[in-house]
Length: 86
Image (cartoon, rainbow, N blue to C red):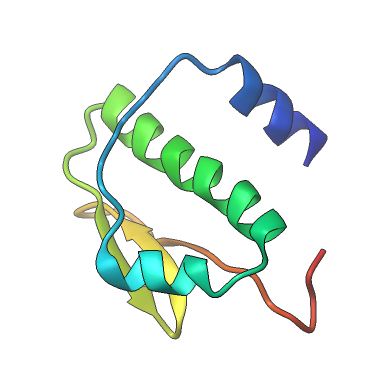
């Protein structure tokens, strides 16, 4: 995770896509520390898709987890679990 934090700290991007309501509600139910880690990961996913002109990113909930996918690509899911918080 330290490499991820370094990448996020030095990144110069801002996608600014509003979070969907379902994702926003899901993230709001997580502890503050989890939110602070997952929100930058979300922004990084969106930024990479934009940087590589991969098209629109579909942001949905799949099995209760935030899911990000592009047409023709494999989805990425991110989540926090109380049983496995680390």
